[in-house]
Amino acid sequence: MLVNRAYKFRMYPNEEQIELINKTIGCARLVYNIMLSKKKDNSKLSKFDMIKEIPNLYNEYPFLKEVDSCSLRCAVFDLENGLNKYYKRQGGYPRYKKKGIKDSYRTSYIKNTYKGSLYENIKLDLKERTITLPKLKEVKIRGYRNIEYINGRIINATIEHIANKYYVSICVEEEIPYVKSNTSSVIGIDMGIKSLITTSEGISYGNPNYLKKYEKKIKGLQKGLSRKIKGSKNYYKYKIKLQEAYRKLQNARRKTNEEIVSKIIKDNDIIVTEDLDIPNMIKEANKTLRKNILNSTMSDIIRRLKYKCYWLNKKLIQVNRYYASSQICSCCGHKNNKMKDIKIREYKCPKCGIEIERDLNASLNIMYEGIISYYKEKYQN
Image (cartoon, rainbow, N blue to C red; front, side, top):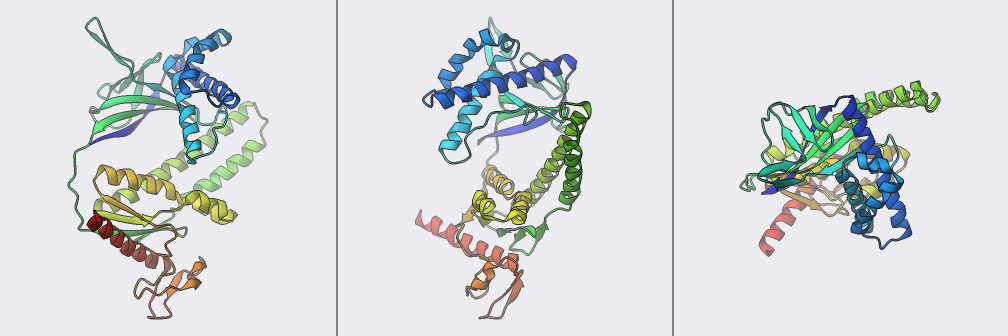
């Protein structure tokens, strides 16, 4: 089975390479913003029409010739992808890019044969720990110490600048061995605020304590940044510190989510969860609840569950988002409308008298509903 997988490395460019990376990021941002303005003026403009416009920009902006031409075309492709997501109601309308916010550029892999010699604009050498990129040539990298080579076809590379650090993400198309499907173990998952995940086996993964630690640090840095004169050296020092704090928080969240998802998928064959409408939940929640939903990173957990289940040939079932998992008794099936109040943390059934933790009760109901859906689908097909 062919899948697209990303490998992220820390880069160690020299001063000349740093200058060129920053220049390329700026040029890609410029092309993106110009084409977004043109698209607003003429909605019928296709991505191919926008790419044809790039050579005309060289006269007005001659410095565009100094950077990788693929990165400018990729900026147009990124804009087109953003517009397609907007038309499919998967995101908002693309905004103009600003310096210092998500500074990155992407370049495509090109492979040609000329006079019997092979040319590749992106080369990855994990033995020597170097990567060759267009215009930059060889750059030292670090990461994936246990891998000697990547067995797959390189599609593109994304170079990022975060808090005075540089990273490159290589997107590779590679073959994943087929894993025989098994249905011996089923688990239901309830996602919440107090506990990040509660499983039908009674295991809870609480919201990690590192959030409070980083939130306090970020709050202090934001306060310090607001007192600095914009454009001064101290302002940029604090800005880098703030970016570094956000990066550490993001990495901590990713690590936590990866550990939880890997554990669940390793031990189970059928995973049942709710089909949550997270954007609508955030929209309708109050200020405190909205913050807790964002901190819980539910969407990232669901995303990881989806692609890992696909890779490992596991079954992921998402029950209807309007299914009242918290209100139904997992023992007798009685529906208690009082459980709509999220402040009630224990389910007490007035019919059978069972007392059970609210999230555990919900995860059991989700599991039962998933098993019903699984067998309905199996025998109908």
